[in-house]
Each structure stands twice: as C-alpha cells, then as structure tokens.
Amino acid sequence: MKTLQELKNAVADKSAWILTIDVAKQLKGNRIATIYFGYHGQDGIDEFVIGDIVSEYNYAETIIEGFEEYGNQARYWDQIMNTNQINKMKDRMLLLTADGRNTHIFAVIENDGIFTCSDSDRFVYFIDVPNEN
Image 1 (cartoon, rainbow, N blue to C red):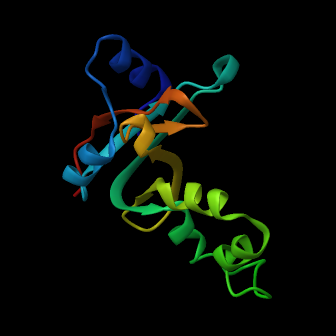
Image 2 (cartoon, one colour; image 1 turned 90 degrees about the horizontal axis):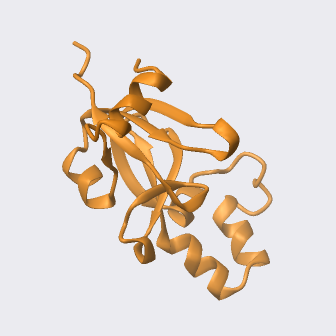
C-alpha cells in the first residue's frame, strides 16, 4: 500500500491526477491509490480496485441494518426528508470498491463530476497501482 508521503509527493510532482466520474468509469477494475487533504493534516489515503459508481440514494437502498422497520435506509429517508433533499442524495455519486465497500468519496454533477471528500474543493487525487497477482 502506498504511504501518505508517497501520495503527497505524487500530488506535488503532478504524477497524481484528480479523480472524476468519467476517469473512474474508464478505470473500473483497476487498482488505484487515492489521497485527499483534510482539515489540519487529517488527510486520507486508500488503495482499492475500482468498482461501481452509484447514487448515495441507491446505496442507501442496500443498507438494512438499523433500518429494518422501514425496509432500508432509503425508505427511511423517504419518510423524513423533503423532495429536494432526496434529489440531492440521488445526484450525489459514491465510488465503491470492486468488493462493494463504500470509499466515502463522492462526486456531484455541479462540481464537474470531480470526486471529493467532505468539502467540494477537497479533490481526491489518484495514482495507478499495479494489480496484485
């Protein structure tokens, strides 16, 4: 796994690229390492094989634990959120790993499909990593 310093260096020397929906679709099935810059040095890194890109709402349809009374988390949202809030969840796209794990990075169309973490200006950068055999 790449280290935080290796990924910071890749961003600094421009060998890391900003991750977008279009790029992630092209790289589906490939292993990448990601970095985002957090508040006060709370930066995050991850390494994974790119899987599906799904809306936050559709992902919530798969979360049942804790929401059994409603059927799933999305059905719960349907009951407590207004239409505008639901539509925002449908427009927010999550990047999943090949094994279905939520990476907790997301993209919205208004931000040109750029993946971010927390704030819309905290871009997620990536480098290709050779697949393990």
